[in-house]
Length: 220
Image 1 (cartoon, one colour):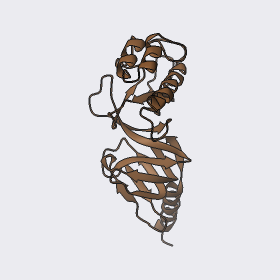
Image 2: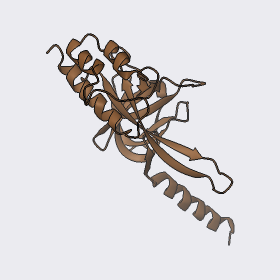
Image 3: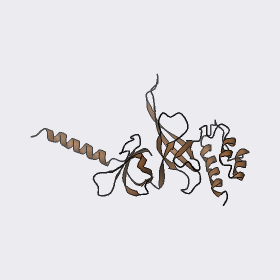
Image 4: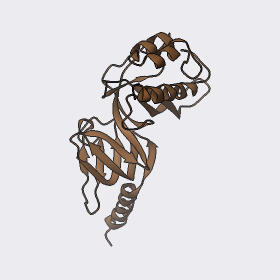
């Protein structure tokens, strides 16, 4: 009997299992989940999607359309976003902070498509190094980013120098075309202000959602 047959069977089983395996780790690391991909050229496709945005290549995003054995392959430059489980994730360039290269991430959009400002939720995987008495471990951090009017492709973290310190001054100036709202921010009214350092980090997205809602109604 050929001894290579058992090893060949094991390889086939493992390979088949890996190909059918599905998971969602972050919006930038998922595999074999049904989703709709929206491209920058206006086209869209539905199928089982694989995303690895750490691969800045022509295969950062793959999509298996029903009936196809080979996936469609897309680079980050070609993809606008994708819809998964009734949530829309949009590809954005991160601004603010010290970045050696241009950094991109798929983020969950928390605002309506026609909003003048957009708020995004970014889930980031962090590998924590081992210490003297601890071993290395993985954690996940949720960050929030704001897209300003006329800055379609880029987003800023809520704790960046674009907004803090002096959130009341900076944000009121950015939204000066809506005087009523700018006045509320400038006066630090409840629900329209947050400090640079706060233990209530969840307060920031709520403040921005209040501001965005009123800014969208301004002039209507």
